[in-house]
Amino acid sequence: MDWKDLIDLLQWPAMAVTLIAGFLVASRHARTRILGFWAFILSNALWVTWGVNDKAWALIALQVGLFAMNVRGIFKNEKGAPEGA
Image 1 (cartoon, one colour):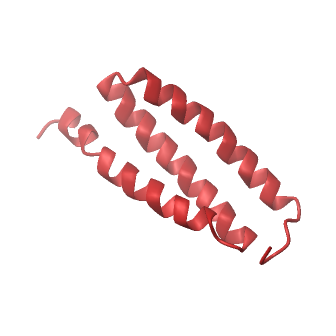
Image 2 (spheres, rainbow, N blue to C red):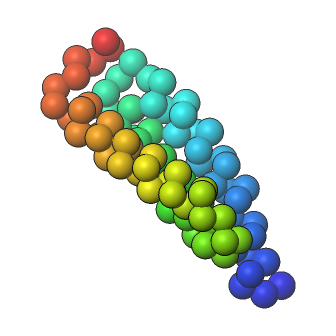
């Protein structure tokens, strides 16, 4: 198995991390939501790595946009979002 085959396998952990991140972001607790946004950022990196290997330029552009929204989500949650709200 060469490195291209290994990178191609990244789509599975990227998918799993994306699902976990979505679950965490749906939490009522700000700390858990922040952890979810960080998980989304990890998934963005995994998808970009896979996308470069597959030349999936639209997917890469999408991940860059989602990365920006995830960073925004982290800052919005750190500014005192009430716990349990």
